[in-house]
Length: 125
Image (cartoon, rainbow, N blue to C red):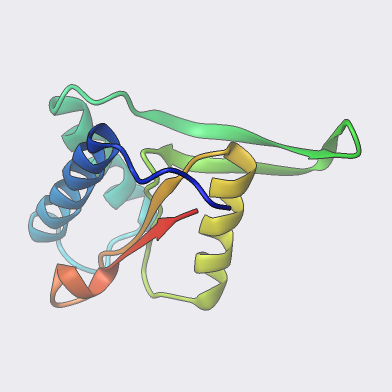
């Protein structure tokens, strides 16, 4: 997809997400379950007065119909999915969520890294 450049507002939101990822990476112990990091991230983003939605259903449309067998949902709509280790499948999953939800900017965040900068991958569709 070709879009206009990312707006200043979307860049600001992206910065807040990355800042929260660094904060969440520092506080809880490493190696915790995905749900712990997810909840910490939600808490931190909401404290910044950001709108955060959880388990957002992503409809799959084909040939004018909404398909119902595959129930995809975004864990946290501020493009956060915490994982214990990176997997190429997660990149594909993130791109799928972005395309189906018609969002432009997403982050795949891995908290199981010594340096947070090595655990953040940015996607622009």
